[in-house]
Amino acid sequence: MGTREQILAAAEEIMRERGYARATTKEIARAAGYSEAALYKHFQDKTEIFLGVLSERMPAFGATLGELTAQAGKGSLRAHLVRLARSALDFYTETFPIAASVFSTRELLAAHRKALRELGPGPRGPQIAVAGYLRAERRLGRLPRTTDVDAMAALLLGACFQQAFLIRFEDANPSSEERDALAKSLVRILLPAAGASARPAGTSPRPEN
Image (cartoon, rainbow, N blue to C red; front, side, top):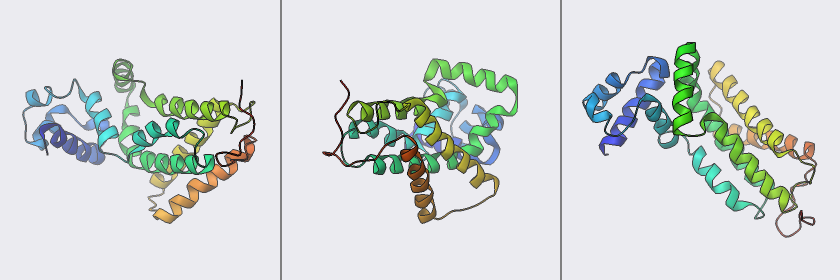
């Protein structure tokens, strides 16, 4: 494990135990066995470390989002969305305790928000990515032309986030099978509401012009 990976592993452990707000770069560097100066050779600030933990140490939600658009028009729309929902459930469940502490003070939230504007799209990124995928499916005719893909993306991810919050709040530990069933139930409700039949590839209606 290289220096960067060791720093992220230490940051993940500290952020899980104490939250983002109480994790300092000095503590993270010490836990990883490096000086704070060495930490700053790999990361600009704590926000960049936080994003590294989310993207490299947590369930592979980013990878799922990255693969999603390439699947437009292929296979089952329902299956793609179930896989997405399950990945989102796992990701939000794991990251909720860390991310929630960002809201502990207005000053911390403002600083974090400012840093995210410089580093990337922030928490709205997944919704943008899912809406882009749904837009591609709509263009190919696998969703009705009237589908509000932005609202559909918000509803699916919002439901996953809410369920993750409840899991954490209730200190529950649903099994893999239970999480699969939950992901399927969310998509089962969403697709009919969008007017979609989730036809398999090759049987979709005429695509948009």
